[in-house]
Amino acid sequence: SEESDDLLRDCLESVDWSVFKNSATSLNEYATTVTDFISKCVEDCVPKKQIRVFPNRKPWMNRDIHCLLKSRSEALMSGDPDLYKKARYDLKKSIKDAKRQYRTKLESQASH
Image (cartoon, rainbow, N blue to C red; front, side, top):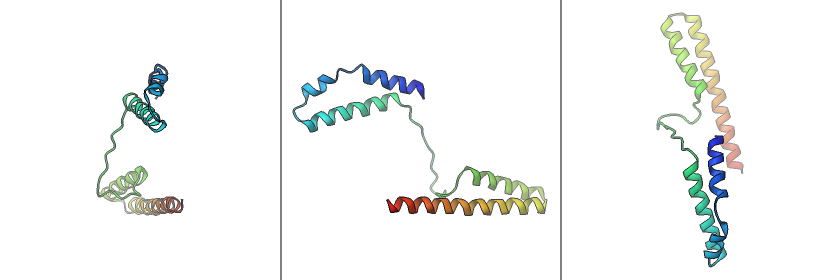
């Protein structure tokens, strides 16, 4: 967010960087202390977001598939066979596309 950006910018601009340079005895020590300080500023200024991961969730499952699963279940409960048939078709098509996209993503990551 812009507030986090401003807070981080203020944190980094208010530092006397010569203190790091004068206290370091080698280039490696200087680089390490500066990197650690920047990491600490980022950790303090940037908000963290917690993501829930379920162990039985397939990696290709996404929000669209979850919505289609829900609509298929609702179509089944409604008792309308045509609505259920369409919902089932849309779900299968979406799952096939998601699996293809996930496979392509993995193949491109493996080739790099």
